[in-house]
Length: 311
Image (cartoon, rainbow, N blue to C red; front, side, top):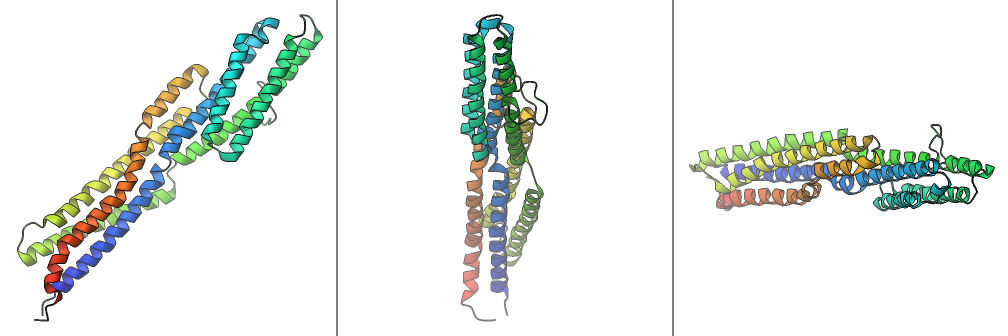
C-alpha cells in the first residue's frame, strides 16, 4: 500500500502550520521594535531638544537682564529670547511625548514665564538706584530658578528639568530591547530554522519519490523564507542601533548653539525609520506568499493520490 499521499499531506500540514506561526511571530517581533522608531524620530527627540532650546533661551534672556542694566529689562533681545522659549515649549507640547502630564507641565511653565517676564518688566519701570529693582530681580530669579537647589519643583528650570527627564525616560523606553523582544526574536529564529528545514526536507522527498531534480514552487518558497527573515533581522538591528545612538545624543542637555547639530544627527540616524516601519506589512504578504507557493507546489501531487485506493 502506497503511503505517498499521506506523507505529502502530512508534510503540507506541517509546512502550513510552520509558515503561519513563523509569519505571525516575525510580524509581532518586528513591530515590537519598529513601532517606536518613528515616534522617537518625530516626537521624543524633537521634544527633548525643544526643552533644551527653551532653557537656553531663558538663560540668555536673564543674562541680558543682568548684564545690560535698566535698558535691558524689556529690550528687543530679552523679548526675542522669551519668545523663542515660548515657541519651543509650544513645540514640546505639540510633540506630546509624555501625554497629558507633559502638556500640563508645559502650560504651567508657560504661565511661570509670564510671571517671570512681569517681574522683569516691573524692575525695568523703576529708576536706577531704586531699592525695588533689586527686589523685583530677586523675585524674577526665584521664579526662573537658575540657582535653585536640586529637588525644587516650583520654578521654571526645575519644572523643565523634570519634563525633560520624563521625555528622556520615554525615549529610553522606545529604544530599549527588553526580554520580551529577545524572546520574540529567539522564537522567530527557531521557527525560521524549522520552516527552512521542513521545506528542504520536502524537496528532497519529492526529488527522491518523483525523480524530479527541481520543484520550482517549493524552491521559490524556500528562497522567500531564507532571504526575507535575515533581511528583516538586519533592518531591525540597524534600527535598534540608530535608536540607541539617538538617545545617547540627547541624553545630555545640548547648548543652544549645538541643538541644530544634535537634531541633524538624530534625523540622519533615523532617516529610514518610516521605511523600516512600513516593512511590517510586507511580513504578512511574504508569509502569505510562502504558504501559497507551498500549497501550489504540493497540492497537485496530493490530488493525484486523493481518490486512489490502497495498492
